[in-house]
Length: 245
Image (cartoon, rainbow, N blue to C red):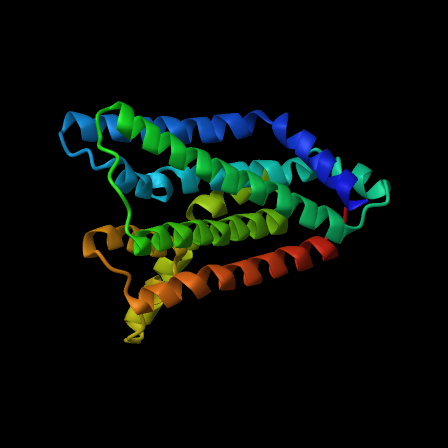
């Protein structure tokens, strides 16, 4: 059943050293960032500091972790044993998606709490967030879900750790750079970088300085991660369904 498959993936997940290494380094980066801000005397109130959650090394480590977790069964050829137990490809696909998504959101929340506590311990005031700022934070998490879908889809399509890690880290940004270059050569006035999730993260972070949420940014933050999710999950499922094992 699907429940047993989820339990199997869950147990396998927590035995992976990559989980602790990837997110441990992410916590270290946050700590070092907060320490450096403290040293230079520019430490923000703790509530403002939590905007760092998605502008730290979290996304990069997420791309590495998802690739390692998803590709493990394909690299070790254990995926054949899972299918041999009678589980369908769709069941395996979505069990991996749900487990990795849960860990992604859970660890993001841990990063948020870690950032807040470290800021307070190092002398930052607690501060407060306006209602629209809580909305920005919700959109950050929504964008993170879109990022996870992209990393997951790429990893399921590639099935190899090395290639998946490389594409997760630089593939999408490289693609946008090439597209931007093509549009520039053809003199097409189209801001293709607005459709890059990494740029969306930056734009959401910048709202802390604008003290508002522009309507265009709000719509982009709602629909862009959704589009990534639909495209990459569909593509990952299709390639996985047709792959020979």
